Amino acid sequence: MIQINLLPYRTKRKVENVRRQITVFLLFLTLVLVAMFYYNITLKNKIEKLNAKITQINTEIAKVEKVAKEVDRIKGELKKLKQKIAVIKDLETKRKVAVRLLHDMTQMVISETASSTSYDLEGKGDKPVKRLWFTSFQATGNQVSIKGIAIDNKTIADFMTRLESSKRFTNVNLQRSKKQKVKKMNLKSFEISCNKVAKKKAKKDKK
Image 1 (tube, rainbow, N blue to C red):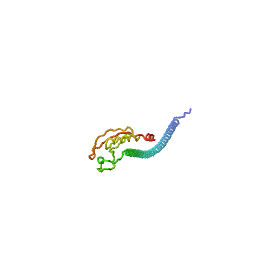
Image 2 (image 1 turned 90 degrees about the vertical axis):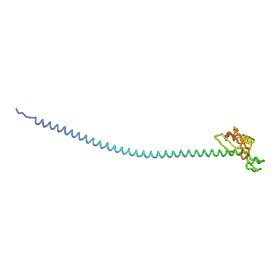
Image 3 (image 1 turned 90 degrees about the horizontal axis):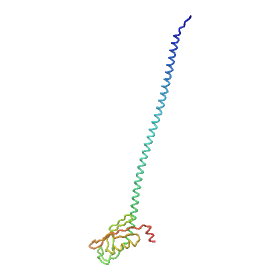
Image 4 (image 1 turned 60 degrees about the vertical axis):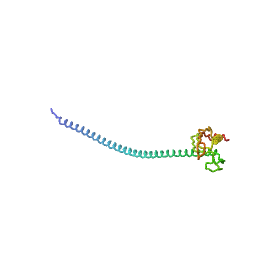
């Protein structure tokens, strides 16, 4: 009977199988490493692009913020300018109202010729002088306060009557009246309060 020793063949085959497995493992490992390297490069490129985009966006944001600050500054300047214009318009309106009011008041102060030097504040006889003049004039809203000096009580009463008769003022009241010496003359200082009548109402009454 012939006997064949297969052990060397089996050992050789076993070694070849091990080599094949190691080769496959190394090949697989190489492919994994290559894939990871490629993925790493791709991911790095994406990160760099994203970082560049973030930098660009931050630059644009900084520009927009700068423009926004400039716009806010301009808005602030415009607001201040509008406030100044409003104040100027208000002062102009008040000035016109005050001038008109003073004009209306002065129209009611009658100039008369003094028949005696006792009424001549300049010391010259037979000279046209005011029997009443203002020392202070204040208007707040529709309320008017008048301070002045008159020759006598009758002059003050006549002035108050003219105020009421003009239909431009209501609630005319004498707040105080007292003697006051002016250039050695016994005159009367007074304070009168009254209310302005609205323009529409005044025009309606006039019609």
